[in-house]
Amino acid sequence: MRAFFYFCTLNFSTATMKKNIVLFVLFVLPIVAYLFFASGVNSFTKLPMITPSIPDFGDWETLNNEKVSLDNKITILGFAGTDVVKHRGNLFNLNEKIYQRYHTFKDLQFVMVCPLGTEDDIKSIMDALDEFTDVSQWHFVFTTPEQINEYYSQLKLVGKLDKNSGTSDVYIVDKKRNLRGRKEKKGYKEGYDTFHPAELSNEMLDDFKVILYEYRAALKKNNNATKQL
Image (cartoon, rainbow, N blue to C red; front, side, top):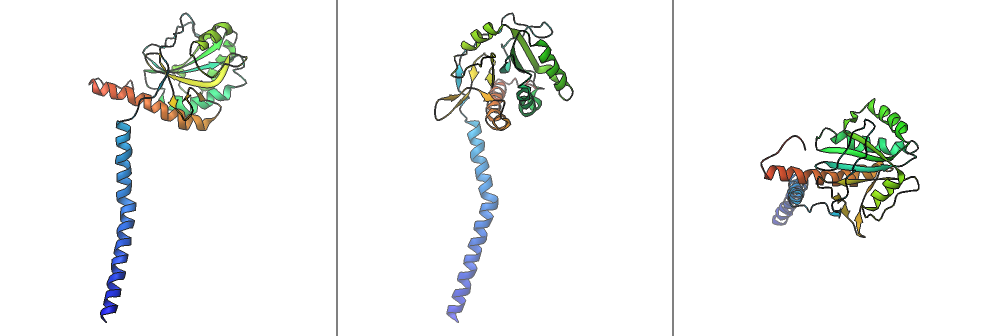
């Protein structure tokens, strides 16, 4: 009888222990994980600087003969190339995955550097985007292929433009004109390939959020938080 009572007590203790483990996994562990990752966000390492103080655009103008500057703006910078119509899907990917989420921030702009002679192509693409997107933060500046290649060389990147003075990669530039990227096992990730929507949704979106967090944290620290970011 005593053995039976001991056996029942043991089974009860085992069942209680299992129940406690299940409750811990379901309720306590997620809270611990959340606190861990939350503390990681608050002490994150800033997105590395790839190239400091890249050049501004100078006298290059948009379709509306306006000038665009990198100063005091978070910029998504790209190079459309002469075959922009062929690769217009890349712009639509960027528009869907990043632009539409964040274009209402006043301190953000999307700038594509385009060769002279592609104005009509860009206008047709903009008209298509305008049907379902507020395109006010999209900017396309125009200059010669020679100037585009010269400008790109000053970014001091490992990647290169193609023969059409374009690339499917886009780059994150902060308000001080520093080109930013992410640390990887082998060097740094300089740009984000707009041909691959998954790369925009994962790596680029994550890094872009880090940049936004940097400025939000700075504004909060200075008691100057605004809706601009």
